[in-house]
Image 1: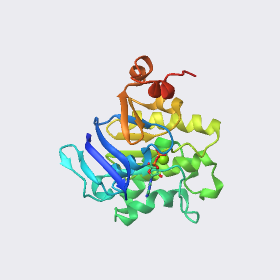
Image 2: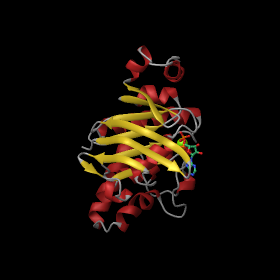
Image 3: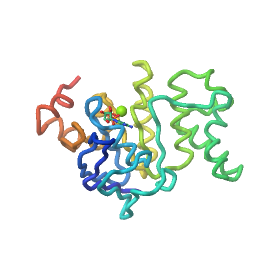
Image 4: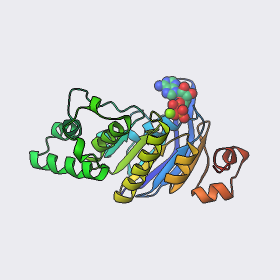
Length: 239
Ligand code: ADP
Ligand code: MG
């Protein structure tokens, strides 16, 4: 179980300040959703947590350990992006097993992990197929499966559903909710600009505005007591 603490976290690209002093604590096993308008810094904050961008200043700690200078794999994180970059010439099984084989897992262990993840995501029937033989939703589940097999302590999602059509988006969202229930020891951070995804998936929502945290709270807290018109605009209009 991993708690994530950010203290005065900042990121600049040249002269341009993108993350402007974020203080935030994400509890172990929590499903935290980052929402906010395009360009407010959601992906950048996620990439800082992942170790895909250097932190300009401030501290990022997993449990009590400062991880500012650790690589993504040293941090024990897995990340799923909007576009699922599966290897087109490999079967679903091999796509999921690839990273584990690179990490020199034993054949039995690789097989066990892939089958466990496939069961969790209900893709066991597709293990022998190639990505092109799958629907968009199935492919995204394979991409999620590829992250799960590595048994991450922290699971990061950057708008994983935004390339799917409306029906698949709902189905895959439900899959992710189930996944959170099954992997309740894994801390999850999920970026979206979709209010319904935020309200239905989150334990807590962090509303970002122009590189700062505007408000953090449960969906109900934000809905009932938005601290600003900005938050109300994101959360307040029930569908
Ligand atoms: P969001 O995910 O909320 O849409 P991003 O985190 O992608 O926002 O981007 C936040 C701001 O940082 C944007 O103005 C973007 O142009 C800028 N930005 C992101 N990555 C880079 C980069 N590598 N170099 C320069 N500017 C960047
Ligand atoms: Mg983004």
